[in-house]
Image 1 (tube, helix red, strand yellow):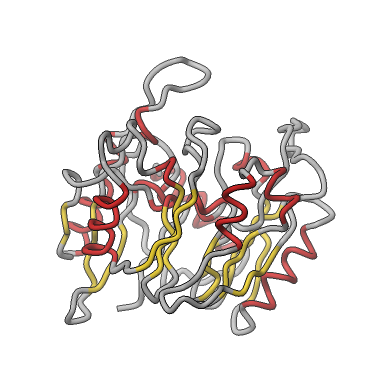
Image 2: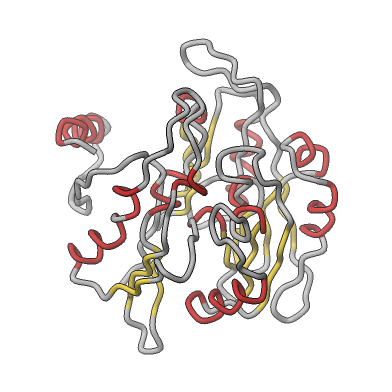
Length: 295
């Protein structure tokens, strides 16, 4: 984010009468916008202290840019967790030699269950030779996971090799937010993975409650009229202290998706955010955000 961009954001917030009292701007050089994948993952130690985990980021498996054919740069993004830890004077756990792991690859229910697609973790372009058991051992030690819901996913279907956060999220400790079967199939999820997802159980062996939101009714069209040729997911939302930011697409399903998600978070207010142009670049709201827990 440049200082010019920071000024624009301040102007937009001020125009909407949004106070800046609790807003701090930190400007770092990055290669792309997807802070969910390259940013810090906050955890607490046994004493409750907030720490930063720095997992290695390698541009979603050393991908090449579809337009230029050049290797996607990731060095600047890979440095973001270290820079934030230094700025905050916070202890950093360096995991860059242990695993390539993107924030959008994993979902955790807060009670020990981790959900992920193997295709974006146990992939030779991220962690060559790593077994499922080895990955679980790392997640147990550094994310506190004790129970795993593994979907196979599909490597190569898009740049992330099918991140979980596009179609399945833990809405709370006993609820998975996802889609109906026909929408999941339309979103290119394999039937075998749909079956595994719907059969998921928590750390105590209890089945999850499923909250199913639709895809958009129509293929997403950007504000300049470009039809992207595919529908949009509402599952990639972001939870803040008092709001839930839900992707909207100027689509007839926006209102119903917002209402379904609102019912899950009665103490927060759902705010629909037009993501049509952002979606053209491959990500949605969850992808461009990374939360820091309250101290």
